[in-house]
Image (cartoon, rainbow, N blue to C red):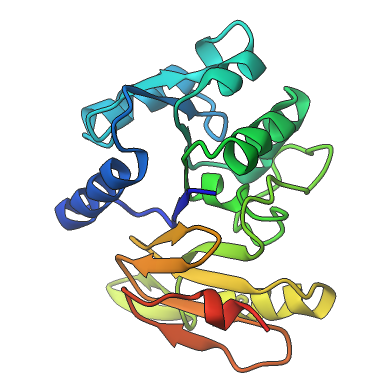
Length: 239
């Protein structure tokens, strides 16, 4: 298994450079990457935007939406990149096009490298239940690819949020990310990684290496632990 998972927020020069370097190390000496843009409505525009922002890392991005047979495209892909957007829309398409099993086989059995960002990270988990997204469509199942044995809450931030009005900041009293993850653990036992913006997880059978940001690990009935770039999270997700 060779899986790279990003939270998102790769908009500053430093974060872009980190993502590009990680992509080049992750995908190595291949020519093209199969890009899955189903989390956004404008598939062609998505591919164009990544190319214009330099987030192709020097690879040719082949949009799966242009393939006459998406399953066959997965079966022949040298690398797979699933982009961000709305997780409900993305997982609905993956199930309806028969891509869940096809991607699982390529990554878990064949060893093809996978990159997910934001929604693409959510669907690499056992389920999509720790997404932040609005359910704009109804997928046939919340079950996801299960490439890693833990959940990720992408775009994680600690504490509450504030909004600006009339030049002043005011507290927003909605649930925090910690509240939502606690609710998840009232019904589920799978560990959750709260991945800060700009963060990446390099995942293989032996490690879950954090780079680019902090992360917080949540396990049911335990105090969350905070970790720094460079740490291996796997020991904190097991047991």
